[in-house]
Length: 146
Image (cartoon, rainbow, N blue to C red; front, side, top):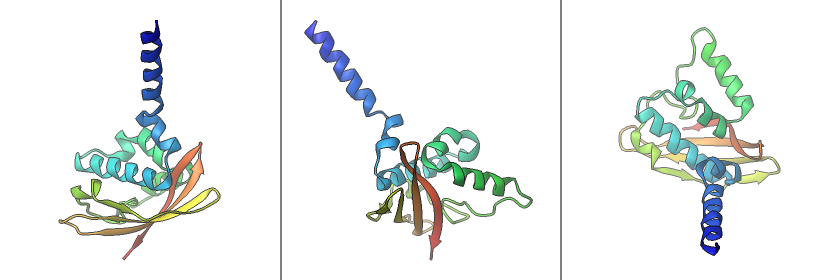
């Protein structure tokens, strides 16, 4: 009986740290790393995040930004550069070479500087603004820094 309770408790603890729960409780810099690891990884595998990864995008990106990006993607002419990378090309290495500054948190908003490093395309510098939404941090704006 005691062994069963221990097994159930261990199962509950494992579930509480699952990937689905990680984003909601994660600090802004953790969310940024998780997002870019997933996002660049999807691009590297020739998956289109807006088509096949919509639920993942919703985990990481604010509702406001997703609506704005959907409008831009459906507008005449569409979108030429990748919004989250501020680039037309990407480097596979960006999925694992992610540097995030300590975020500046002010209430329900946070900002951070991000560097994605890779040998083929080089380093991308980005400024991210995040908002608290649905109990976690979500990306709300990405601006390239040259």
